[in-house]
Length: 104
Image 1 (tube, rainbow, N blue to C red):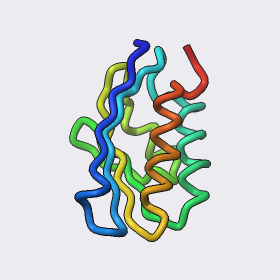
Image 2: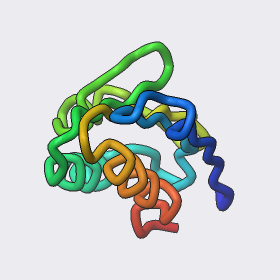
Image 3: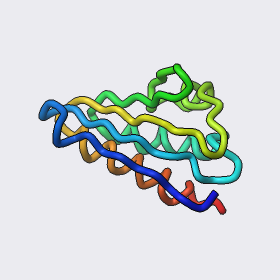
Image 4: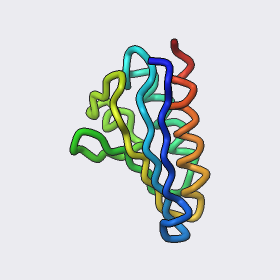
């Protein structure tokens, strides 16, 4: 898949909360390397950050939690953050999805 899909709801959310929908566009989905990238970026923020997909919500700061989503190509994922740097956190993680984690 080469397309990315994003919808953002940071302006309508409370001042310290941000939500964005993204699409898993890389061919292999959220395997170990993308999960590691997400967790590493998430850990750089003070905000509480979660990922939701297929009825499951996990801590974005945990590689193992992200892997349990088992999100394949084309899956829709919700990024949700709350805290002082929530919008920046969601933006940074959404960029990883948009860049397909550096994969084709």
